[in-house]
Length: 158
Image 1 (cartoon, one colour):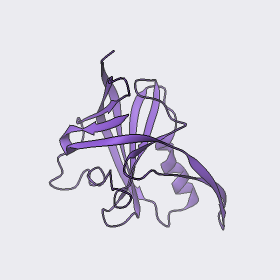
Image 2: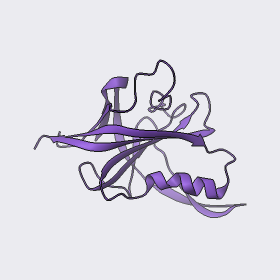
Image 3: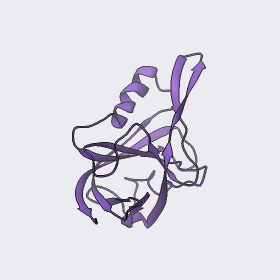
Image 4: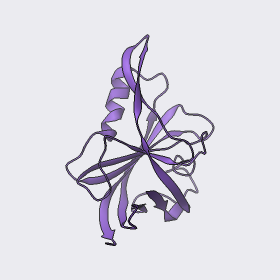
C-alpha cells in the first residue's frame, strides 16, 4: 500500500505497524512500533475503503522522516490543509481518496496520562470511513503530536 498527498508531493510506502508492552514508573502500557522509511498502518485499525478509522503513523524527523511535510500543517506558507486529498493505493491499484476535514496539534511530552489518553481518542474506531495521520512536531523535535483526519470521498479501480 502507499499514501499519496498531492499538495505535498508525498508518495510514501505504507507498512504494517504493531506495538509492544512497556512497564515503567507510570505502570504498564503499550507503545507503537513506528516503522522507518514508510508510514505505519496500525494493525488494529480499518483498511482503506472500510467503515472505520484507517490510522497511519510516521516519523517527522528520524527514520526517514516520511511525515516531515505533514507535521507542519497549518504553518505559514504550507500548502496543505482542509479540503486537500490524501490518497491510499492498495496492492490491487485501487485508489481511496480521503479529503482533509480537520487537524490538531497538542502537547505530548510531559503531558499528563489523562491528557495523553484523551489525545489517543483520534486513533479509536469510527462508524464512518476516516483516514487519520499521526506524527510529531516541531520538525526538529517531537514535543507535540499532530493529527490530520480525512473523510472518504471516492474509490477508483477494480
